[in-house]
Length: 281
Image 1: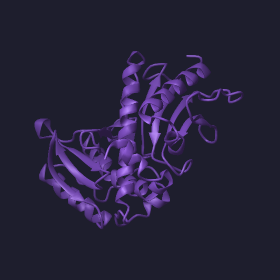
Image 2: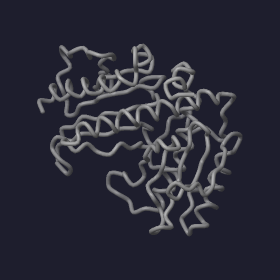
Image 3: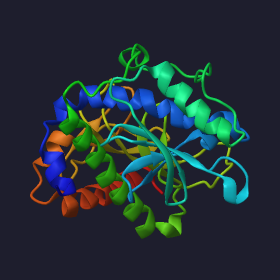
Image 4: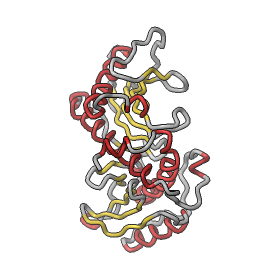
């Protein structure tokens, strides 16, 4: 089934269980890097990439030289895996598996490589209560929603990577998933890395959160902007001004577009231009 067909196969509001389950399981992927890599001040050592080849989240390489590996979560199949380049060294289907048992399996795989285990480790941030409460992984008869959520991430990874490529002269950050918020994003910093005060525009995709109970794309400016007389996004979407300010296109709004693969990149570019204008950069 094609990516857009998979997206359209499940209503946006039906993806909640898949979001909570994959958000929980992706913590193990992030933790494998967190405990085995030198810490960075911005926590970027623990963020994740999206691999469009196998449609999954991938940690930074851990281990030494040509023996290093990446830990992965494949949301569509709901599997944990360990890769070395294109080679899958091991995998574990998570359906019906206790969280502690999944971590124990990953510990054993890491131990084979003389790497530190993830069991007993906890992230330094709070998780959504629905995610935090999960003790056993389950697709709950919702394999279609896991595939649809995976397709949303895959589509967004392509769109965000293309945005970064088109705007390479502005040195956007890499497209990465931050396991805390569980969003896939890049950022343009108009003041340069290391500046005490930064003027930025974040461009990203969230599978849903406390703001929206469905996936959404966002373009979010910083520093503070005047929220009076905000211009309407020309392609789709709306302004969000509660707790964060940004132009948002929910999955429902995206699905109303005639051609998502054509029109969502146009939404991102137009929203980015509007945010730059509001920031005066």
